[in-house]
Image (cartoon, rainbow, N blue to C red; front, top):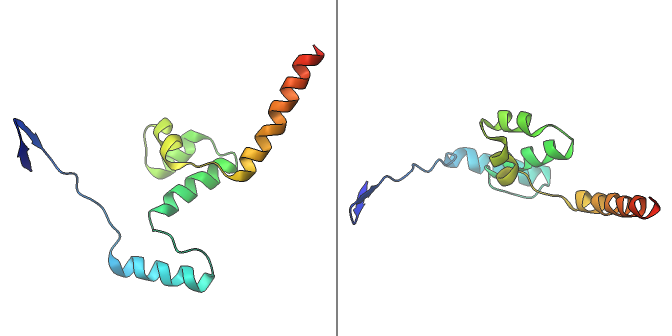
Amino acid sequence: MHRRGRRTLRRRPRLHAPPPLTRTFHQLSTVAGVPVIRLHDLRHTHASLLALRGVTPKVIADRLGHTNFGFTMQVYTHLYDEQRREAAPCLAELIQQDKAS
């Protein structure tokens, strides 16, 4: 802890994978021919792929140990280009249906 003015700030401990684990993960990634990413990025990939497959946000949050699925969806899931391409025709269909009504 350190003082800044009248407030006492507590530093949150930073959790890092032990160097041997990270080294092994990077070696295995290289051997497998996949991009070398941070070990923590697997959490994001895991959540994003589950969302892409239609797994409910509550289940994804539970798998990551989160109690708030909104946080999980905002921070841990990412859109893939395929999802963006799929969304455009859906919007076009809605517009066409509206015009026909």
